[in-house]
Structure formats: structure tokens, C-alpha cells
Amino acid sequence: MSRRGGLRAGLTGAVTTTATLAALLAYAPAEAEELYGLVIGINDYNDEVGDLEGAVNDANLIAAALHEIGARDVTVLRDREATKTAIEATWFRLLATAQAGDTIVFTYAGHGAQEPERPGRKGEEDGKNENFILAGYAPEGPATRERIVDDEINTWLQAADRKGIEVVFVADSCHSGTMFRTAGSAQVRYRTGRFVDPDLSADLLDLPPPAAARIKESEFTSVTFIAATQDGMLTPELVIDGRSHGALSVSFSRAIRGAADRNDDGRLTQQELLSYLVPTVQAEAENQQIPGVFPLRPEQRPIMRAGPPRNGPEPIDPPPVDPPPVDPPPPIRDPSSVGLYVVGATAEVGVAGIEVVASEADADLIWNPGAGTVDHRIGGRVADSVTQSDIAAVLSKWAALSFIKARAAIDPVALSVPSGNRTYRRGDVIEFAMDGAAKPYLTLFNLPPNGRVELFIPANAAETSADWRGRRLAERLQVTRPPFGAEHMVAILTDQPAVALHQALRAMPTAETAGGLSAALRELLAETPFQAGVTSIYTSSGP
Image 1 (cartoon, rainbow, N blue to C red):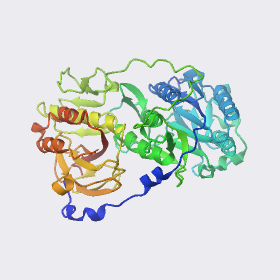
Image 2: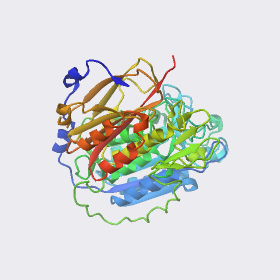
Image 3: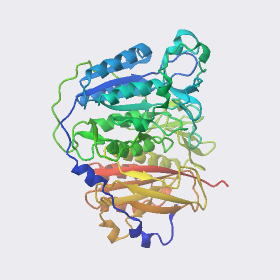
Image 4: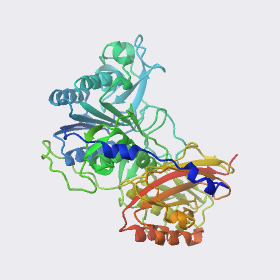
């Protein structure tokens, strides 16, 4: 990609300031309240739909995080433990125990679905209720009760809201939709269930009165919904840290451990969660998934506690009442590596950070030497016309991205594509933006499909010493020439100008010179605190 002509002269006018950080720092947090958790993860379903692999991992991860930050009571329900009776009983027990000002974190990882709304309720514009499918669900008989319909959840949350209890409801599932782009592999598990709808005339689920269907999220004053993705989109399972997971659950567990606590006050606001979850989930899912926090309120009010401040002493919390979660299963592969599946061949690629795996389902990347293609299992086609001599640079790029994404999970900066998450064609102009810089000195570069490096900022001494804290970067880029596939914009912000990094990146303008990118980043940034962001832009030569 190239930067649009005349843009650099107008860059100052494209930068705006924000008062968000100042507002966060000005807030005086209240004393810590009690924290409770109801955590659900379901992999094992009846025959109506395929099982999942990562939902129980998600539940264990979130439960462990809640214990670590001093939750008083955490109940974890996995697979067949997660019956409707057990979930209801746990929720109302926590509701009876919690007091005004306390927080209940209620998380669900598993299949979501839709079903026809019952006649006369008229709460949904599309005539469909969203639901969460439990392990024992069947469309007939007593097992029709084994689902939770959104009308029910509305009344549960309304009871907490009226008592003044904060609720953070995390749904790592989806109810319908498609991906932005066709995924690069058919072996992807999505968290939307293709279940047979219940026979409503014989449905044994006892729904609340019809008024519950008309409760709107905006009516709640102390409930925060966190959705895995936007309406109409799918939620895929990925391999993260060597295990199958949902990206939202992993990011949420990191967020509450303290990664999202921008002002290190031991508390989290909606804005802090949103600022952390969106860039980290999008980076993990190659922009195929965009989480949401709603209803988003303007006030900077803490909604739950967070883990130890990143720059301060660890708080003293009481030990957890419940036993810790079960030990996690062994990782599918090295948690720090990128999994590569080679189609129709065995291969030793010899690139640090790349691990060849035996199953396409366990891979991040799929290389087909015969076709000369590399696909991301979730993201789609990332490189075309790849030869044996090109593959080292392509894989080095992805190993470098893995390193940057891991560091972005600690301290992210938000990168976005306001012109839309779509496949861009030759000649198209892409709008790109960066927000949330907390460190001053910016290194901004693009990694085209073939792995070479395009250093955009700094381009001169003035940009090397520019201070980006509290400023917004707005750029316009144009798709001008091959190679086409996945471009990745990377932002790194440091406390001092990263002169050695700039020199290394300028020395990698071609695929032939960029094979050492991953090693260079790890060496130059290993001991350097930095803020990082990654966003993908997919391009094509097609019409």
C-alpha cells in the first residue's frame, strides 16, 4: 500500500486531542466492593449440533481470573453441570447474597441460537428470540427447558438492577450471521447453534410474562452487556496461548487481571473494558470479530474491581471461598508459536516461532505449496503466488505478528479502519486511524502479504521526536500494486524514540531482506516496555 499524496503535509490537521484519559485519571474510585461470579462453559452438546472445543477452557480461564482478583464466591458450571436448574439456583443465590454496590460477573461460553418468538409477546422486531443453548437441550419433551431465552435473562438482570447490584454479563457466543470474509478453512467451529426450534405448542419452557419481552438494555442502570461480536456476525473458536478458546473470554480474563486498568486504580469502567477488548479481540480474530459493550454510559463509573495495577503493589484480598478451577488440558501446541499446516506434504520450515502441526483444525496458517497459497484459518487468503523461496519471509511476518499481538494484550493501542472491514481492490482508498496512545514515540509500519516492511512513521527527524500521547492519527492509504492478500498495520509506542528499530525496519524493504523480522523485533524490544496495536487489511486484485 502507499500513502496518499499530500497526506503528510496535512497530517497535523488530521490529529485531534481527547479528554478521555484526563477524565479517567480525575475519577476518585470508591472502596472495593464484593465480587461474585457465575461462570458457564459448554463444549458437550446433544446430537442436534456439533460440540465445541474451547468453551470449557474459557470458563476455567475466567474463573481463575476471578479467584485471582479476590472474588468472594465463584461458581463454575461446565458441560452437563450447566443445567437450567443449576444456573437459576446459583444466580438467585448470588442475587440474595450480594448487596447494593457489589458486582456479579455472569459469563456464558457456548452455543447461541435464535427461535421464533411466541405469539402475542411482540418484543423482537425480527420476530425471533435470542437464546443460549444448554448441554441437555432437545426440541421436544422435558429437554426443551434446557435453554435460556433472552426474556428470562432480562428479568434476572432487572432484579439485580433494582437491588443496585452491578452485573457484568459476558456472552462469548453468537446467535446468527456471517463472517466479513470467507474463512480460510472449513474446519472452524462457530458458537452459533443450528438447532431444531422447539415446537412452541408443546414447549415446556415457562417464560416470564410478556412484559419481559419489551425490556430494553438501555433501561438498566447497573448492568453491562459484553457481546462477543456484532449482531449478524459469527463467533469463531481460535487457538490462543496453545489452546482452543473464544477470543472474548481470553481478552476479558486478561482485562480483569489488570490489563484493561488504564489508570491503575484497581477498578474497571465500561470505557476501559471497551478500549481493551475491541483491539485485542479484533487482532486475535483477524478483524472477523468485533466485540461490543452496551449500553455504553458516558460517566466514567467503575463497574468492577480489577487485578493488581501494572505499575503498583499487589492488593491484599481475602482467599477465595470456592476451590480453584480444574487444571487446564495440555496445550495443542507451544503457546507462543504460530501453527502451520502444510497441505499434501511434510515440511520443516526452520522459521523461529512457527510450529508445523499435523491437523488443519489446530493451525493458524495453511500453506498449500502446490497452489502457492497461504490462508489464515479464520481470516481467509493472506498470500498468493508464494514460492518455496518466499515462504520464509511470509512466515517470519506471522511470527512477528504473534509477538506483537502478545505484547498488545498487555498494553494495547486501538487501530481501526473507518472505511470498513472489507476486501479492498486495486485503486481503493483505505481510511486508517489510531487512538489511545499512552506512550509518546510512534513507530508505524505495514507488513504486506509477502512479509516485506513498509515503514510509514517516522519518515523524518520531526516525526521521530513527535509526542503522540492523547492525539489521534488519521491516515489514508491506497491499494496500488501486488502482492495482494493480508496487509497488517502495526503501531509501536515507546517511552524513547526507537531509533534502532527504525534502522532495522528500513533495512527490510523486500521479501528477500525481511526474513529476520521476527528475530529483530524480539531482540530489539525484548526489554523495552511498549504499547502495541495490530489491524489487518485484506486486499485483492479482483474486480
